[in-house]
Amino acid sequence: MKIVGGIVTKTSAEKYVEEVVQSNLNLNLDVQSVAFKGRNLSVKYSYTIDYREKQAKMVIEGEVYMQDTDKAMKEFEEKWKKSKTIEQTVAKTILDSVMYTSSAIGTLLAFSIGVPAPLTPSRVAEAGKVSAG
Image (cartoon, rainbow, N blue to C red; front, side):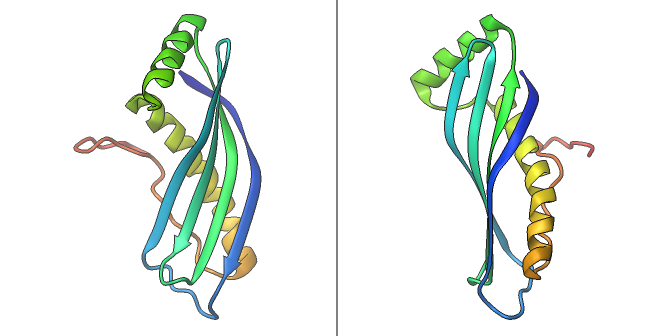
């Protein structure tokens, strides 16, 4: 399954204190919905960057579009309907895409409210494996 596009649909950024220190970010990816149409898949998400101790918070919402063969997508859809889980390789691809987009948008949002940019990993790797990035 490959990424064929994506869109950011909503952003928000709030700063709660005068001076923000970047230490200790909480990052959260929430998959809000998964939609199937033939060989196409749309994953809606909300990605939250929370500067701990209530310093600042940014939220980026969007969609990732993926595509595969009709057969592969039908199998994926059947698995999804049964377990509501996304297999690890597909989840990794989605997470890489969201992290890339959110790092870029997060940097712009951080600049707009005067906080340190949310530096996040550029690629996701399975435990024990190294990923060049």
